[in-house]
Image 1 (tube, rainbow, N blue to C red):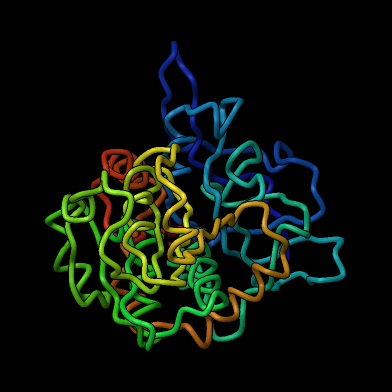
Image 2: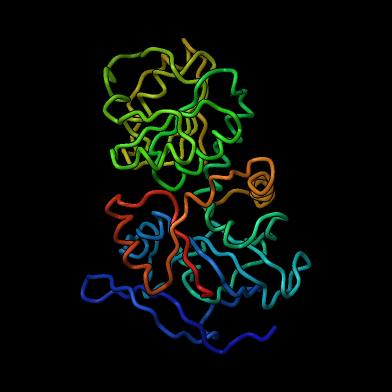
Length: 333
């Protein structure tokens, strides 16, 4: 397949201390010199992308820059024995979209070890409904299952449930037969969360009621926490005996102020989730589960679609906490 000399990308420019997004025509020769070039068909919007687009130096150090930590597309060139030209692949995590030009460009150049073949039974568009958020949700659910959390053990809770990770987790858990409760600070998200599989919606205020106590009433066999901070501290206290809590986010804070009581009196497990530097073989395992055993008929209900031209609007909305579910970026239409 021919490699075009130019391609379009959503670029973030730093101008007088402000960060401006605009679509630019780029020279293919400007891409990093890695061993695999991919034509991007779909990407997705994650909170980390919005941070990059707004100049957060903890995510992206140098500008101008092309965000997009997710990409699904077709291999145009590779030196890898794992792929051939024309293969459909996806890339999530590592340095893509952080300091390496990301999936908001029609072409990316990456090390082959960042990419994995698209699993059978999943198309490129579906893979980006999941994206990093869906992979993170899958990793969380996998850890709960491996820790012994079964549907018959009792209800499970997802915090920050209207966001990308949370909404995918609700859809998968309900499809797997878990009695799934969803917590959200957005009253407007209730209908959406029930549509994707939540049995009941719990307000953030309810989760934090009596949160100063060292232990709370046992409720949850398992929890997928996307919030951190005081929310995480509270759900640890209300976990059932030998229950497990996964944690992957810090929207409610990066500090965890709690006691050891949930761990030494109720045998509770706190399980950390990382989807960025995860070994590729673990990613492949989860992607295959998402494509088959964990597939959900609710998947399409999670998705909103946009073009590169429309993307800045959604970047602004996700920074304001106004996005429900997943935003998929179509670079092909």
